[in-house]
Length: 89
Length: 418
Image (cartoon, rainbow over all chains, first blue to last red; front, side, top):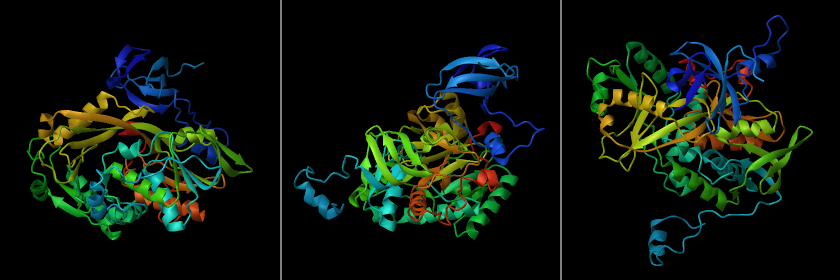
């Protein structure tokens, strides 16, 4: 069982969360010309890192907020959690 | 190579079975190969076998980080089927079914292929309609499919829950009678033994740490046991695909996820077929030892840990008990996990890459084991001829940018959408 420290609600079990994938993916700006390759990278292509991975989770059975979680994909250790709009250094 | 036969079995009995040849050698890597296959799993071993058998290319090495057959070919639920709706998947898998049927003879190795049939249960009228459509598509591609009504399903699997007042009553099912199971380890070992006998070097405990690419052309690989030159390199590493792609500065439409399976304690024969639950993701069959072999959903988040997490297992088994209540009486014997190369549309990739002489085989999601022979056969063709075969033409790497996705069931990486 993973325990995720929701920045809004505190430590909760993974059962309350649903996964949202790589948080480092950025949607291309809409007001500029976007190449097919850029759309491809946004929609489909992923690094799927082994080790530290910044990812989105939604506290779906709690506050329903999207959050960012920094987790190790090899050991499942969770290092830090952030609010969705927080910049991660 | 020593043939496995009743005659040799009797003959070796006189020397207490101490004089059998080794099934494959433990060679030191040569300086150069015509083809290097990275990954000594089922697909990699099959690729090397078909390179030697179909294309007469025997100066081949298989580079394996651990030991052969230690990854997903040893961690799956052994199901073999071709019950797909889309042409690309159906024709590819049915080609594989034909290879499965004669595999034990081809490899002179008993892979215990058991065509016991698979039944996908339907739990609503809409699902029956969808199954009728899929069954018709299958039959158009020459694949056997039978639509069963509730009574027919009850006759085959009376132990399933046929009560009226359940959340997901059984309306019927779609059966592929020629589907089945095989002994997974034997598939790896059978391919390894034959490939080795035709001159393929199987190099274990050898990790790939880099690639030599110059002027857009592959020159060789760097490994923990030294540099190896190669004219062509095939990547066939399932859950480790992204790790190697990173070394090549490639980003792929693949995420690595964890999939669990489990077996119960052995019981007397109760289930003749493979059965899948239609209102969730759960499948079960009974092994020759009597264990109920079960599996279902991904753990749901990116993972390279080859071990699972209990909430998903509990969720999967809850579905199992809804389908077959007697499962709740069984004790769990073992659970295990493997890391899957989940593609974004749920279908695999067998293709050339932008680097000349570098080939990619990945994206097998939930269905890698049953694809072993067809994947090896088509990948060997793609490498040997430097062009894709019509069977794997649809499994292209650029289909995501061109929009030619093969979305069989929407079972890609994003289980969280469902």
